[in-house]
Structure formats: structure tokens, C-alpha cells
Length: 322
Image (cartoon, rainbow, N blue to C red; front, side, top):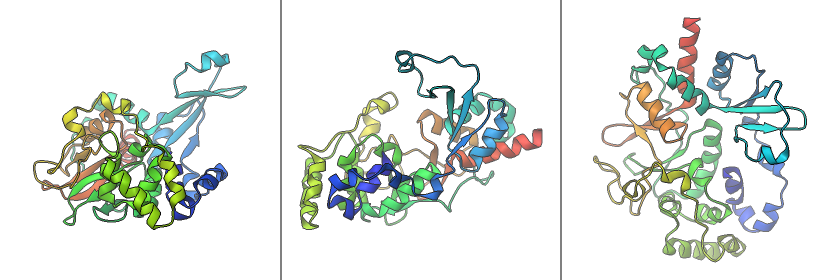
């Protein structure tokens, strides 16, 4: 969905959304960086092989299931999404999260490593740190969002002093539909946070989007908004988010940071350079995200830790143990 939203958010596509939506799906697969995100392994492949692939950037490992009976169509509809079928074989689809959950359950094997601080392990990524300033155009996030999908991370929003305010995440955008594309094309990064957070866009921002579409001669894109902007489904967040988590204004945490509007703080997960590896693992897994932002005590953004960087550490330790 993020690929589709980013595609539609470009001005040339918003000028004629109907034509853009009729484009072949292959146009979203043209990026060579995405060609290596899926890896096929055999059923007898070792866990080390899966970790080795994922530590190099593979997001999903596909494994054929031997001697799996062929289900009738009705039965297939009730199966876990981790198993899919064609006419002859059944396959298992493993994600980085699946492997990280397994490693967390076996964390005693890596107890000395797991207790170390992430800055000591040198897994804080500052090179692939995607961020925008609060007043930057949200449209400048499009290329960053595409890159963050490849790196399984997100786009941070910071204030002029570099303090973390929130994020424009693929995870959040995946709960939307094409109705959010006009907002990305017309709003600032800070206003987009308010537009996509807390259960739906404020009416004044919806009106602002319509006005700016008209100013930019993109009236055809107004149809994407419908009678009212589509609201995301929050069922996936409700089990871990309290009302207080969902809507906090003004101060974003005890040491400051700001937002002129309400920001959904429950999704943006942060840790500190001295946080232990196991603590960061638990944070990411419990919130169903593949990364954790790293901030200083005053809230300044300093880096990001991803499942990929964590898996590299486990890969190195497994090599030493073998």
C-alpha cells in the first residue's frame, strides 16, 4: 500500500488519478533495490542460513513445505497468512520478526551479548537515518519512504533543534488507502502527522488539502478524498495503545519536543544509546515494528536500530559458537 500511495502522491499522477490507477503494477517493481527482499530457501536450510540472508537485507524467506497435503479452497481461506499455496506445493513465509521472536525465546544462549548496550555493539545506524524537519513539505518524504520500505525502517520528523517529534511510517500508511495521497502532496510534514494520527484527519486540514489541490491545478485529486477523508482501521493498534498513548499534545515526552497538533506517540518507539540489546528487541517485537529510534536524553534523534542490524550481531555470535 505504501508503494501505491507514494506513486499516487506524485504531482503528475495526482493530476489524473484515474489514469495513474490504471498503470500496470510492474511500475511499482522497477526499483532494483527491491529485487533482493525475498529469498527462497530449502526446508533443510539451517537457521543460520536464514539469519545470514536477513542480516544482508532480505526481508522475507520463502520455504516449500514438503509432503504438505493440498487443501481445498475453503480450507485455505482459514489458514494462517504465513502459509500460501499453488497447485502443487505449500510454502511457509518467514519474516525478520519471526526469526527475532525465536531468538528472543532463546536469549539465554546469547545472554552476554543481549545484556550489552546497543552503542557498545555498534548497531546504531546513522547512515540510513531518514528524517524531515517539521515544516518541510511532506512530499519530500516520498523518496525517503521508498527507501525506508527497503530498509524496514521509517521517516522521522524532528524540530529545528533535531529533537524527535514523530514519524511518517510505512506501518501507519499501510492502514490508509489512496485518500492520503493528496495530503502527502500538499501538507507539511508536521501537518501530515496530525492528518494521519489519532483516528482521522481534522476537518480544517481536509479543507486545507482541498484548497491547495485547487491552487496547484490538481482538482481531479479531490475525488480521492471522497465525501470525507477515509479513516484507517485502528483495530491493529487497540490492543497495545491506551487513550493516553494515542493523543498527546504539546510536550512529546518529559524532556521536551513539540508539536503544534496532536501526535500519535504510541507508534513511534524510542530507546537510548545505553539501552540493552534485549530491551530494544522486546520494544520492537511487542509493538510489531522492525526498528526503534535512538534518542539522547533530551530527545535529540541520533540514529535507528533495525532488525537487520540486530541480526548481524546474532550472526557474528553464531559464527563464533559454531
